[in-house]
Image (cartoon, rainbow, N blue to C red):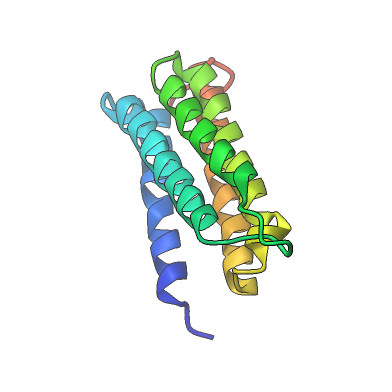
Length: 147
């Protein structure tokens, strides 16, 4: 089965995470600010997507998805804070933000809108991003020495 455009774009979106993680390991000077900026940019983009999705859906009783609205704004603010703290701490905050967004998208009210392939894609993308965040944490905290 051929990959959909969404799957291709999702995979392409991982390249900067993987490239900046490898660059940090190799000691490239600009890698840390790029990793931090890209983590925040994607977290903000995904939070905005969840916020936008919550605007247009209701539960089985016709109620708006206020949990997603509030949590999406909270995740954006979490990412903004993470951008300004030491990298070892920021990676944990960014990871938490990505996991919260995955949880929001897997809740029944939103999950029913997504295809099986998209849900599988979101799990895979989040897993790779959190692994990159964990590797960067390990590098920035000295657990994993740079090359």
